[in-house]
Length: 512
Image (cartoon, rainbow, N blue to C red):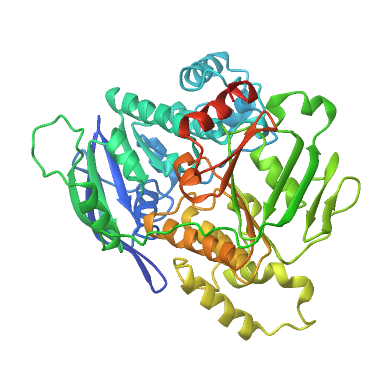
């Protein structure tokens, strides 16, 4: 299959998202679509998938002009897309989600055993650890991503579009996913990998198309391409320059804690019923003792599903405590058996901003001021709120910069920026950041790190959960490892090795 996108343009009000884009996609090849957040990558592929319709241009498949006016039309042509934000129903089983997404079997004929067998066979090949009877809310983020991919393959997609697939994966899961992408290409699929990560490109891409400000500015071969030299190769520095317009990004460093006395005390924190606590698969946490000093950044590492999200939700009051207390500046902010009392000086960046960080039907202004709703006057001044929101939108480069649009219109990376703009504005005493740079490009990542470190310099304590072990070791003051809901090791990062932390992450306390 050969797909040709010719002269594709797409405008959202005053924002030109795609500007006369030409692009070729071939079967048996991994095409990396590289660029910053807001470069137009996802918009272009959503046009190919029928989610959006182009204002100008056309699409050809094997030299035949086609009209793709809906995702259903795209799937009928063999084009499938796995979005950065998942569309699974958490309370249903994996099998029920797959059957709901299937276009092959009417929903009243779920007893069709042939289709059941074929679907489960695809699931077992891609994700052998996932059972069809598992409920989606019990799966890790990486497992949910695999289920989304099974949905696409179950529809016989020959073109598979993956939107930032590695942004939610651990390093080990990312390596496995790279292998899977190569296998799909070797089987004859065309794989389009939307990414801003050079590691993804170097690991599995055949060709690279770099987008910037809505245009394709370069197409070249990846270094691991074994095909004849029909196009030129580019170095990593060249690619960064094409993406962001500069080869040297600002270097950020953590600042030392300003005070030795802890501001945050987490004491004997337990979350979950006894049965769940004894079962590592339920993401419970148990016996957490942790103190964070003023100006200190503590990194939380661990393989996905070992209680990181539960810990963050418990500290910020989204989950009730089975036992324990959380104190900030000597005052209890969360205790077992006592309802949580909201504090405006606690910032929380959740793991999944679409589900837990924004109200998608509300505009950007309301999403940016929602934390202050209890302190607003009875008749808030919309003009003042809008002006403040516009300042944050510009400061955090949220695209498109229209404060009156619904938050649900934003891409995954820009949703993340919106949440970061709200949570990192003001002067928080405590910042709980879960994967704060997930889905962000190189420049935005550096910008967010600078924001976090500046807050630390003013005395905030930061609990930073990430699966990027290199960044945790580089920027945190101390690193704590969660394994099956327990902290199995804490070390100063200047004395910690990647090997030691990796052993704690995979083997627990015994490896220390």
